[in-house]
Image (cartoon, rainbow, N blue to C red):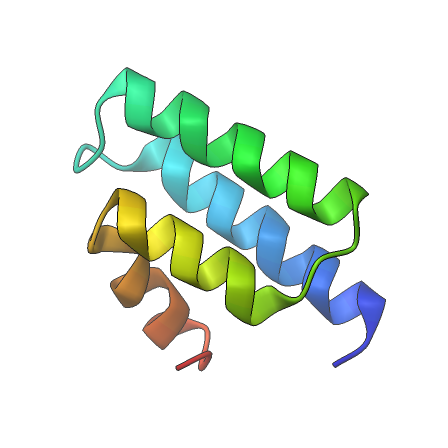
Length: 69
């Protein structure tokens, strides 16, 4: 997957984080920080997905909607 696609997906995930009521403010903050750290370090998407899913099952829905199982 291209870097551009990863950036698009990460931005969609961040938007989902900001607009959901399924995460508390701490989970939102932690999740966004993880995304920014992993993007900056260019880590693999599957590792990021795993870490976010460990924060909340909510992320499985987000990845599923994006076609990233």
